[in-house]
Every structure is written in structure tokens, then in C-alpha cells.
Amino acid sequence: MTIDLNSRYGLNPAHSEVVAASKIIAPCDTLDMGCSNGRNAIYLGQLGFNVTGVDTNPGAIDMLQSISIEQDMQNVKAQVYDINTANLGQDYGFISCTVTLMFADPTRVASIIADMQQCTLAGGYNLIVCAMNTEVHPCPVPFPYTLKAGQLSDAYQGWELIKYNEDVGTMHNGAKLQFATLLARKPA
Image (cartoon, rainbow, N blue to C red; front, side, top):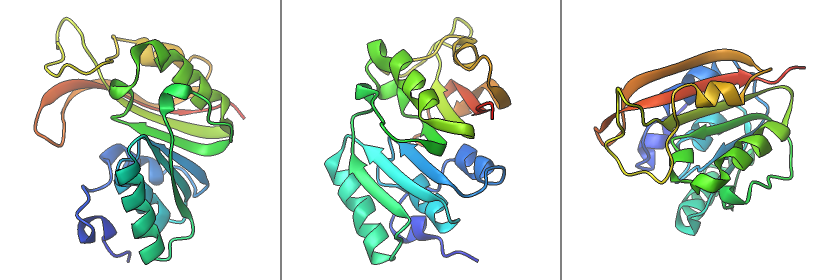
């Protein structure tokens, strides 16, 4: 049984979609895009994934590094990285990008997704959870970027969609909005 390091360090629990994906995906080299303080990176690291957490916030990266050092989690690394550069430069078996794209530069999102796809090993996985703005469910939060209906699944044509939905959900702050959730496997 693993210790709940997230609550020990005052982090939110790992995202439910990361938890679900970790039951399908074998531990591998993993990228947590927009990792913040590391709630998903710490969780996956405890399961044996080799995780690199990236975020633009140096304070968040420092916190994740401190936790990984204090817990001797040599399989969890953290680095400052702006996802808008869309230049990962390394391949991963699993790239997770949960509630991150909506804070990206809207003109860069297509490049960010293309870079994620390019840097995913054959047979590897991408997980994306992103807010949507549709006529039926207008987004109540003024995020810089939101997805339109079908937009995310269209970007993953040719990949095996393990999970895809566009459901109304609740953010950790209680706001209700529609999210596109995708777990896709790159052809081997």
C-alpha cells in the first residue's frame, strides 16, 4: 500500500483520469504537462512510472523537486518548461495533459498537440482533459483556450481512442463546465 503523499504535502488528489489511465498503462517514461505542484507526477511516480513534470511556474517546479528529493523518488523529475514552445525533444510512452491546454496560447494549441503526438512512442498514450465552449454548454470561465465539439477527437484520427467523451464535469474549485476527455493510443 502506498502512502498518500499528495495529502501529506497538501496537494490535491491525482486527477481521476490519470488514476484511471494508470490502471491501463504499464509504468513507462511519462511526461506530466502543466504539472503544477506535482499531484499527478507524485501519484504516478509512486506506481513506478518514470515521470518528468513540466510547468512554467518555477515555484511549483521547486515544490515538486523538493518532494521528490525528500521522498527519494529518483523516478520523478521536474523542470520549468513552457508548453507553448511545443518542442519537447524527447519521446515518452505516456504524455498526460490534464486541465492545462485551456491556459495555453490559443495560437499554439495545434502545435502543442502535434508535438505531443510526435513525441509519443509507438504504442504509447496521450491523455488530454480540456475545457470546452459549446452552444449547449458555454464555458463560464474566461480561459484563454477552449475546445469545440469534436475538435479533440478529430486531432487524434488514426490513433486508437481508448476513451473519449465530452461530458459536463466539476473543476476542483466547484465550477461546472464541459470537458473533452481523451485517452488515445498511438499505432504501434
